[in-house]
Amino acid sequence: MDGKLKIEQNLTQNEITMEEWERRKQFVNFTQEDVKLLKQLHPLCLAHSSKIMEALYDWIMQFEETKKFIMTNEMLIHLKSVQEKYFLGLTAGDYGEQYLIGRLRIGRVHHKVGLEPRWYLGTYAIYIQLILREVMREFQDKPNLILQMISALSKIFTLDQELAMVAYIRPIEDTIKQQKEIINNSAFIAHTGRLAALGELSTGVAHELNQPLSIIRTNMQSLEFLGPTQLSESDFNNMLSSTIKQVDRATKIISHMCSFARGKMMPAELVAISNPIKAALSMFNEQFRLHEVNITLNIEDNLPEIHAVEQEIEQIIVNLLSNAKHAVEAMRDKSGKGFKMSIIINVMHNKTDKTIDLEIIDNGIGMSKETLEHCYEPFYTVKGAGIGTGLGLSIVYSIVQQLSGKVIIESEVDHGTKFTIKFPDEL
Image (cartoon, rainbow, N blue to C red; front, top):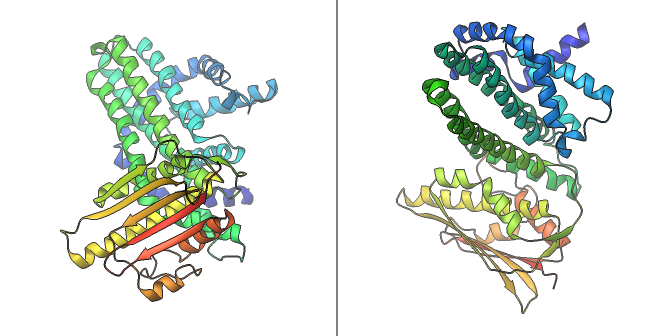
């Protein structure tokens, strides 16, 4: 019993507190009336739980990405039983600490076994379809009650999806906190740099995730306000399709974060440099938009590939974009609100040098001669306290050096900075 209590306390303390859980319920307006409605649905869920589980796993078994986790018939039977308990918990009426702990534990198990969030979160879309069909059939003569039940279900599904995201994202945050002491190992330093970059990008990623979640919630509210009797089968299916699309969008963002933060590197391979550039930009787009930083991307057509680890190339770009963002914001603070912040990314094939040249140019605060002399040193930073680790450029230099490439910096105080990374081409 003591061991179990310690595990449960650890889950709530490290991932989400009860106070935060209650605030989340308040934010989606999950009330006691919703609890009553869900409890009213419970007998229907009990009556159809076996049929819904069969339909759910028939669907899951059609996809190799999820089927591979179910290796024996005994495991399938066990998973159906566990999933049925989860399903019935949706309408059991108890949404306190034990519900929170159970949901976080499920998310952690899925994360631990390597089930990608797109498949885990995608299951919610299947649940929505299976449950709503039974609700519409059972209460077809009570359209107002259907609306209220759809609203209650949309709220509990939204809360469960948020907890699923916590279970995947919080381990990354925990790792960031645990690995502040840097070992003199280039691979470990590079990994820490990626985690630090994710920490700096967390606000922008939160905004990116909020967009698909908002659309999902709007779709569910539309079902609530319009009602099943006013929706054609086509409109209903379109709304479900939109919801599934936004679930996929949210899971893609989370999967990308998990991939970027991964400690174990994939082997080097031929990489089209436009891919890591666009992947890196996807983590900055919302921040750049909110901070009014103008981004210009120029990529030459038909570029040769480079032989590299794509994750490392993305890390180079993330570090340089992060530095450029801080530089232009510092220049705006110095020049005034009328200053137009700009970052330009150019990629071209230098046939003379036989290199793929990546240029990142900003009109920021620039670097002094002293800063230029020390900028590659680990832990050297001119940013304020608590901003950055001083690892970014040392990691960039280390990665480029391993690729037999070259880093060129041109900078002048108050006149911006130009980074040129020269990667050997594979022609």
